[in-house]
Structure formats: C-alpha cells, structure tokens
Amino acid sequence: MGRKILVVDDEKLIVKGIKFSLEQDEYEVDCAFDGEEALEKAKNNEYDLVILDLMLPKMNGYDVCREIREFSDVPVIMLTAKDQDMDKIMGLEYGADDYVTKPFNIVEVKARIKAILRRVGKREEKEAATVTFGELTVDAENRRALLNGVDAGLTAKEFDILQLLSSNPDKIYDRDKLLTAVWGEDFYGDARTVDVHIRRLREKIEKDPGNPDYIHTKWGIGYYFEA
Image (cartoon, rainbow, N blue to C red; front, side, top):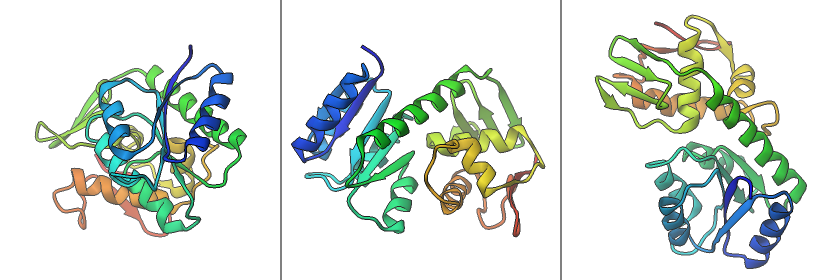
C-alpha cells in the first residue's frame, strides 16, 4: 500500500466514498466518525495526511486539529460545509494546511492531497541545518524553533514560513510569494492566510509581537526576517 491517510467525517457515505476513491490510487485509508475517535487514532498511528470534517460529534474539527498540532505536524485538509471566509481562516489558524468546501469533487480532493504530499516530500529532502539568531534557534533537522532553549511549539506551516524567511534575511516576500513558496502553486487560499500565520508565529517567537525583533513588516509590500 502507499501513503496512509486518516479520513474523519460523521457522514458514513462520504467516508465510504473518499475511502474507495483513495484506495483506487493505492492509498492506505483509515476512518473515524467523531472527533474523539479521530484524535485517538492520530495519537496511536503514523499518518501521512488527515482529511478532517469541521462539524463532528464529541469534538469539533477545530479542536481536533489544534490537539493534533500539539504532537504532530501531519498535514491536515479541513472539510467544511460552510462557504464563509472566516471558517476557512479559522481552520488554517488552528493548524490546518488546506480546506475543501462541501459539496466537493473527489478529483479536486485528490489533487490537493497530491500537492501537499509532494511539498512535504520536497521539504524532507532539503538539507537540514541549525541556525541561531540571538535568543532564537531554527532547528531545520527536527523542524522546530527554540526560544532561549525552549521549544516554541510551531505548527508545520509556521515553521515553513520561519525557515524560509530566516534562510533569506532582509529579503522581502510579498504575500503571494509566501503563499506560493510555503503552500505551493496548487493552494486555493488567499493572502489573508499568510497574515494569520505570521501573527501566530510572532506570538510564539517574539518577546513583543507588536514590536518584533525577527519578523518585520514592510508596509504595503510584505514580510522579511532581520538577523
């Protein structure tokens, strides 16, 4: 079998359909039908990707995603029946990597999966290094940031942004370039996704997020890292 994917939705017909389609592409598929079951399986198994519905019994998708981010960087695609920008942004803020709005085309879902797994594969192939900037250490090998030796608890996307910016100090990236570099050309979101992740990243690595030492804003243009 190929990559292992966890599909989480309380609508069993949807799960059955996704499972069948992914297995045709030689993915190994595990299923869960409520938030607590999903979290338990994510803790006890190694998955390459999680497809997670927003509205779940026992624990909603936001909370499940947030809990997963406490122990794993596994990519998460959020499913939502709500076609509202705020719901999408909230999903990304809680640590999701992408979202799909119901009703969806399974071909689109599989395209998103392939794009994310391709990016993860390329990221893992990059040479690892550890670089320190004052009190901040960027540990590429273990994909973590340390502030005064303490793990800052970054999500996968937060670390990707930090690694990109810190590897290119003083280079200004506009939002579109960051979206392409971190989320990939196949990502369907908008520039506000970048703002959400930058804000959360600053909250974790800056002494004063409103007056940052590392990640700065070039007003009207984008963001840059000051070494």
